[in-house]
Image 1: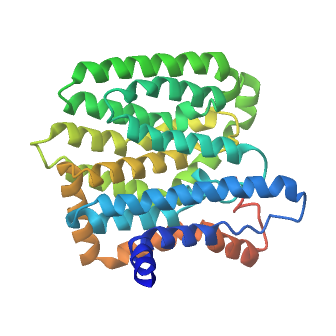
Image 2: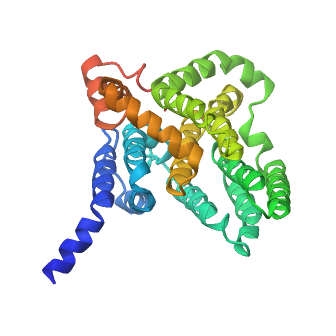
Length: 337
């Protein structure tokens, strides 16, 4: 029995590490004693999110070959250490309101989307799933939906059943557009007067969010450049370039209402990370080649990796709380909330 437990824990040690790491980041100085009937269900939903994230991270590492495993681990550590993980997983704001339950549904839907895309019969549920997501949370259109679009586009250019995926793309776009027009057009974009009055602060907020995850954007841009050096698989190389361009979605951020969930900037980082992990675990050559180049470069210059990790962690979790206490001013460090 002891040997079985040891074998089980050894197999799940990656999941345990990531869950413990995220649990430490869940600490928040803003939580106050209140109605436990309200807090406990929200905490339970957030813990489900953390378990889901840890299980997926461990599964991706196991699914990756020896060639990609190091790059996958580096990427997971950088993402979980970054403020993007706090934002997308609601590590700082899970206790505020019902957003944690909505976020659980959206993240679960994204994970389900990766599974559906490869199932010939089940993939046609994607339009219905995306419609439900955008109806429940209209900001889904600018946060998580680009992931589905890029994923389907990749399958269009690299799959023998091209027509099926073209039809899937068309039906998904129609479903999301219909859901957005019915439920979200007035909720997402600010009216003219509010837009003009708050544009300056919104631009500053977006710029700050871009700055605190800048190392990850640079990493994906460099990786996309390396992926283009594999001409044999142009579909994968093009996908890597599209993934690197996702930060351009941030141009729409100042035009939107204050999000009650993941922001556009941090969601772009999340999408980039998810897609790279997906293609690396599937052994796609352009992504694997780019990952090898990155790992080789970081091994030659480990200081770059440490600087990126320190920068990302400085605006996240316990490190952010420490900065707040040292500066005795929350005005600057609350800018991304």
